Image (cartoon, rainbow, N blue to C red):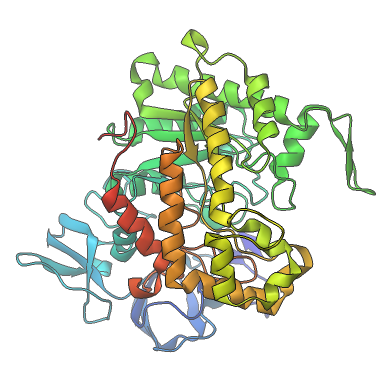
Length: 515
């Protein structure tokens, strides 16, 4: 296939019908969807979509029934090569409440004739998404949430209590990131923006942070050059609401040698380490990438400091990523970092990921456990040869992290955290273990574990805590989502409820956290 500069198909071999999956199965909203586009051609939908009908030039509607199994694909059956179909938008059922189309309550959704859920407060009206959505192909960036709606209100409503949002996955930080220069970055109107390795346009991250009044946390791609770092610093400085802070971190888990983390190999080779693919071993690698990671992080923080200026440093938080499970690794990072005081101060926080329960996924006997036994291990311990419970074991990670952070005048924060019940190696395919861990994440006792865990974090020196992850399906790869899908009833989401209750009870507990 041939694509234009924006990523739209302009030619394809005979018999080839370009198509793309736009929504997965199972949890999409039921109702009538609107499809809009420019150009000429025969466009349609496949799988669970029903009653597709064109209602005018560049507009069609289709229905999604109550039960979906295969999701929805958009397909180009044929197209005009001189004026190809492009700028496709699919608008979900429902709408946004507001006083007018220019005064919307972006966090409150409502039902319309096309479907959706919710109702508006007295004095507000319901405006169909088609009336008020932000068109990324024609509307200016300045209209994002001002006055046009960018995000589904239900998504914003589920995020509204969070103080900060980490956009690591939106940026495709791990996913073999291809970014080296600013010219490669995704833009709001370019279709490749949503393909692997490039991530979502940063303007969407700024827009979400601004409407939520939540601090954004971004990860600089591991191969990004200095000009890229300068440009992204200026973008966030100039477009983020001035009362918000940007947390900036160089890559993510540079220590992680798993396949999906190429940044680990990159930092090591930048030190001169040599990898032997035949025996999976590194040589000439005494620092394992830690020296380069510390040096490159300091370079990036110097750039951000210069862009913002000393007078506005309260608008950024400069983060050093650390390794919860290997304290000596963090000590070596900070040894290479060196002095962090006075004019040499270039970092504000040390970030760890104090997960609990991860060791259970490597023990075969766990696959025969019941949830009662599993939660006894989480709360009380005494099995697997461990003298401590999973919740007690994580306490030592936190206290060690806090001690090291204090030594360098840093806050201890978490870049990720929560339960880590997932099979390791061949046990990942153990169906009994999978079912046990999924059931445990849906059990009310998991909410109790999160409450105890978060109190442990607070009581042992932890400050900002980032829960991983907001929304994700449960599978053999883990049950990390605090929500499994957008419209999930909170009655079946114990981790989400625990987080919301903890936020309500602990709005602020460290110096400088007041808004």
